[in-house]
Image (cartoon, rainbow, N blue to C red):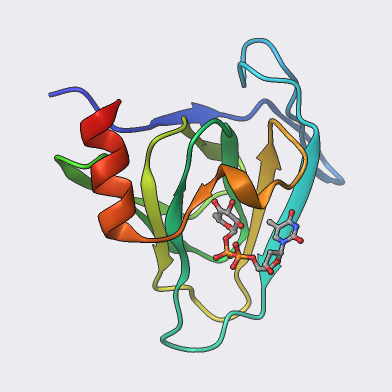
Length: 135
Ligand code: T46
């Protein structure tokens, strides 16, 4: 069965003083990052997301802590637990996503392929399933 999203390894340099990970277009992600945002201090039992993107590509990284990314393409669902700054979840457009089960102190870093544009969001699940059906 093919997966709804891909886990990518983030090149990480380790030396006696610590670790350094980096992301750039090429082997790690297929897009030029044009925006970075991060989600932190998520309240206990609270979720983020609850929408899909029409065009946006994103790489989601658990910089600290861990959380679950629940995906739905209109037909099947899949969950990914992110728990390491050495890997990221590559999200292509057309996926309904919810981020859940944040552990205390988690930081979710996202690299996005485009500037913020509310018109790229589908924030209603019925609208999303209709959009998928019409694609
Ligand atoms: C996604 C998940 C993983 C901006 O003004 N600029 C931005 O770059 C972003 C990301 C958000 N905003 C505004 C829009 C809303 O008024 O910040 C507010 C909160 O955004 P939202 O409710 O969309 O946040 P999340 O955490 O539910 O979703 C975010 C991203 O929006 C979304 O693209 O895939 O993280």
